[in-house]
Image 1 (cartoon, rainbow, N blue to C red):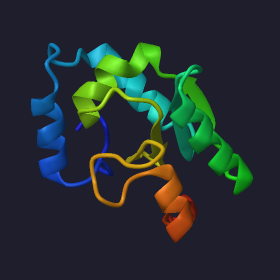
Image 2 (image 1 turned 90 degrees about the horizontal axis):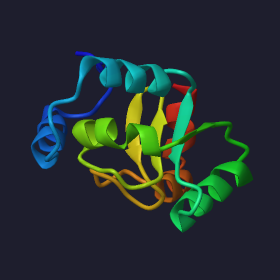
Image 3 (image 1 turned 90 degrees about the vertical axis):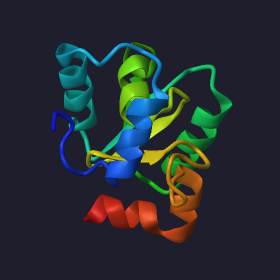
Image 4 (image 1 turned 180 degrees about the horizontal axis):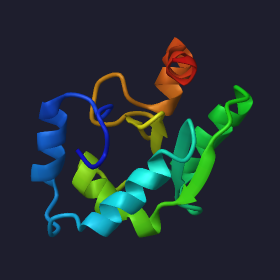
Length: 126
């Protein structure tokens, strides 16, 4: 698989593909997204005008968690193909999509809930 093996259940990957109305992801964009997701332990796709991005960023900063912030605009089509979502933020830990500020595509997703439960830090240490 182009995006690696830590992307959750096959049903969520199938949902992501079927939820996207765009053309199939071109290999160059898939590689660019894969490279960016793998560039740091925590990658935060950001939109400067997004209040949820600021809340998630503030929560991570308050916990002392380092992350790489990336403008989401160039990656939206690829993120939609992969996750079924184009909303910001889109947060990834060691190649695994963990949602946005408060949720995502799985019940356990979301920066703030994962920080509250300790799961975010556990995934960072794994």
